[in-house]
Length: 119
Image (tube, rainbow, N blue to C red; front, side, top):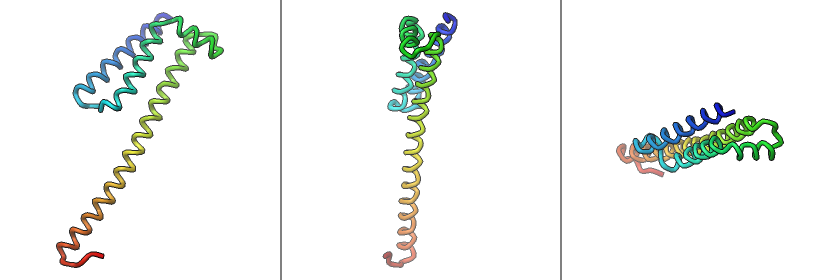
């Protein structure tokens, strides 16, 4: 269990560092980095407090704290992926609307070039 917690500490520290460097280099926007920073902080907190894991395992009815850790990590990243799916869906819808508006503007510009009145 201690080895797992040490690996999780290393992974969460690397995730924190990666997100901060990505924000600094403008590879990720700040509003999207907040949820990743929170996820990394939760992982770091859980990896450093074995007592919290044991309490979580007891509350969840699990015999092994490592199962509680796996469950929390899985749920955390499932929520992260859901949030990113919502963001991508919104961006796709906005992209379609923008393409439609651009097509309308191009149509009106073509009518003006041809000298035809538009309806």
